Length: 393
Ligand SMILES: *Cc1c(COP(=O)(O)O)cnc(C)c1O
Image 1 (cartoon, rainbow, N blue to C red):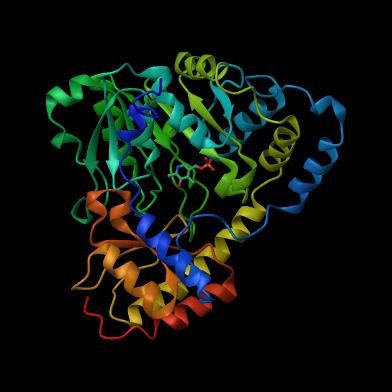
Image 2: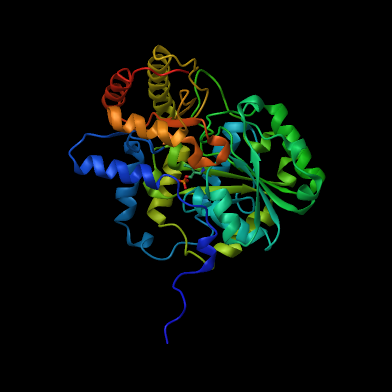
């Protein structure tokens, strides 16, 4: 007997992938021999610093690293993270109870609802936003409630607009600053209000902070635990992906309130079996080795941001380079929706940008461009964009 369907119903609940149409077009153009420049993906083009690669090479050859790693990460790694965090923000984190290494932060973000949220509970998520906040909640049977981010609110959610019955049913709130896709940053005053709100409504505040080190002109993004009282309700997710150009290595961590970190660890013992120890030694090297390379990468991103701002502004936009992240978030010209404009740019000049609506309905009217293409490619993309004609902003 054949079963009525293949595949689980929960996959049907995941919102449709809105980039599919653009992806199909990009593939079509490439097949036709067109040199498409992709500014669509936030993935550093700069290589992982050599000192980190060298430690991987050495430790990968050592058989003591070839066996299953501890579920909770090497003590040396948790201590390196604790030291990094303290140096970075003056905050003390207990290396044994308040830090858990993860297989990139997506591992922690996607799984946290399974550890902390019951079916039917509400998960608050920013929109536009990183789609994993919503899909992780759906996978756990929870109900996502989207908090709109708008230009009028500087891309910060309006906490007081959350209906009180929703706040009462909410178990978890996602925030992400510096923000993907909007490149917005959050000041102390907003973070204090968010902590106060979550304490008042007994909500776990999950701050996703992979861009905490990608900032320019002396700006230092706050980490969550610099806010008094945050550790009693909060978790923060960090990643080596963006800070050390290590997206392919799959390593990050979650830190914060010990019993919450412990529950995520308990869940993960049933899902994965730790992080390859050679990758952990390389991460220890990364965390202990200072921030020179990260600063150098930020200098490169800042220069690219100025190039993009100059180019777009010469075409009629009025944008300022962002204070953080490697994204530019800008309005689409009049007469286009975001998918229409991304298609137009792809068709006219072979440059791939991301339509804002792919990050949620409130992303409509905007596009995201990532400056993680090599300098020469980004310059070529910008000189092609200068050929776009008759845009009205
Ligand atoms: C890149 C990114 C992540 C996760 O990256 P990992 O490689 O899984 O560590 C998480 N959140 C946001 C908003 C991101 O942009």
